[in-house]
Image 1 (cartoon, rainbow, N blue to C red):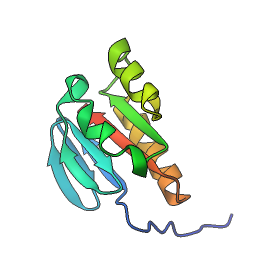
Image 2: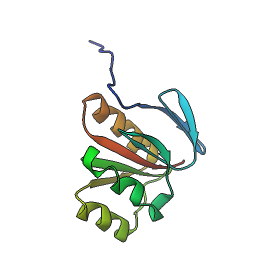
Image 3: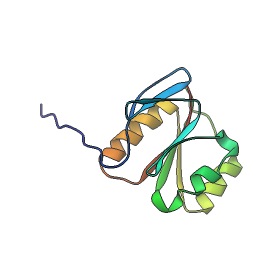
Image 4: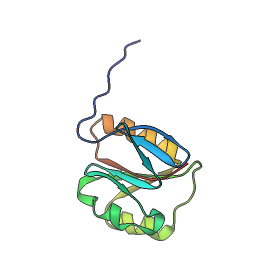
Length: 117
C-alpha cells in the first residue's frame, strides 16, 4: 500500500466534529458555520443565503451539512443558490466534512455550510 501525505494549499480542512462544534485547521468553532476559501464564519442557517451568495465567485459547489442526519433544505434556499450559479449538494454534516476534505485536497473550489451534529 502506498500512502501519500495530503497537502492543503490556502483553505483549512475539517479535522473533527462533535456535539455542537467543528475543529477546522486545528481551531474549534461552535455552532453553525460556513467554511469558504476566504475564511470561516458563523452561519445563520437556512435563513442566511447571503453568506454563501457573497462567495459565488470563489466556489463551484457548496456542501450543505444538515446535522447528524441528512435532511431536505428549504426549496427556496436551494433555488436561490442554484439560480445564482452555485451548485448545492446536501448531505449529513459528517459526510459533508469528509467530502469537502477530499475535494479540497484535489484543489477544487468548494465550500461548506454546516449545521452542528
